[in-house]
Image 1: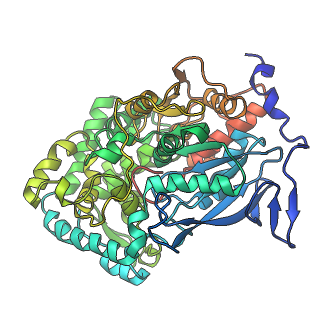
Image 2 (image 1 turned 45 degrees about the vertical axis):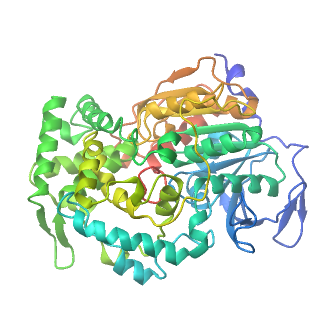
Image 3 (image 1 turned 90 degrees about the vertical axis):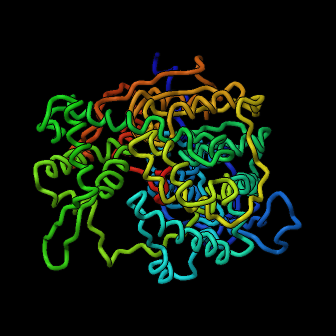
Length: 564
């Protein structure tokens, strides 16, 4: 395709736009733009783009004004201004629990390069998250959280008694600490809050790009407000039918094991010079079996590691399997090289590197600032409470067994199921999407993005969304990782730009895109290296570099398994 057919219409976006909204200077710092109803203050710059901050207050219950009269949530807004923009694209980074403000400050430069200067990028802290007030907390103080939140949950059977009892207290504490606000921390309310954001900035149509949990928010929004869903992208798709209407994540781990074996396969392809594990075996199956066997032995025999009198501890199964391997499946470009190096050392008898990377917890860096937004939103959204699960602990464990057998990594969700069963709050929303029901007709069709092998939001879930929304199209990047941005693909970037700027969808219902270059097993010293593929257009080179930086720089997330 010729350059003029690709990006020429986008490369001129730095030219002045005589139609751009005029800012009214209200004070030395505060500005209000024509057609908007809120004031903005400067709060930094990102890649030479001005960043401005504001906030809105939304009712505690968007769907019934008689509830919580006089009470509201404060929603912080952060906007990176496009030089030629008249519209804002709303962003959600995932979670639930991801901060939109932090996300934009950390990854706004790359996303702006991918999208271009024709749009502002606007993100927000959803109700209860980060700087939103009141924040979703189960503990009144940081000290209380540090004392009361830890619970043993590594051994499925042995720890189940303690976890069963602890979860009952946890659920009650969450309900008590948040009071009336607690039951209105859910995704349908946040979807309605997005309309309040649009109204505040004087924008009728929704332009949206949501990642991971943000795809659930996007699907919920598009179903509740189809008439305003102008150009909606969902990237790394959550199955909304399971999320809202099933007691378990039936699809979440569909491809997780495939990503693990893909890590091994790509390691062998890369060879010992790039992947240290390849020096141990040159056969993928043998290497995988050796790795699984060696790590499984840590269940009964953790390794003692002593470095000095202040740095020592143990390296156990969950340190390696969950914190090291499972988390690395999300971010192959960022983490696979170091993972392979640390695992190779471990298999050769040296556990120090793996311990420092995955097992050592500095007591001076205990995170007491966190909040429990993930718990509130996930359990308030879906099926929860004792009435939806077996009545006693042993039958509950029996019920969980088939689910945990679906994937080697499914038991990482162990603690969450106990908390879900013990959750005390009633379900206050009426959003119940119907699987295989009539497809939702949005103002314009939805664009769906995915990798072929996503460790937590599988391709099958993206296909579920394809069926649920009339005229939607799916773009699949033939690679590994969580969300399309985990690997660079110009093919995908072109689809995103055509969609946002021109409303053009791919011709095929399901489009396959190649990964550009060799993104896996990148040495740390070369992570700042420029392009890994060549492009003729300067505009495409900028976009490619932004994609590489996104893939190599990772994401942000609250620690939840759905989000990055």
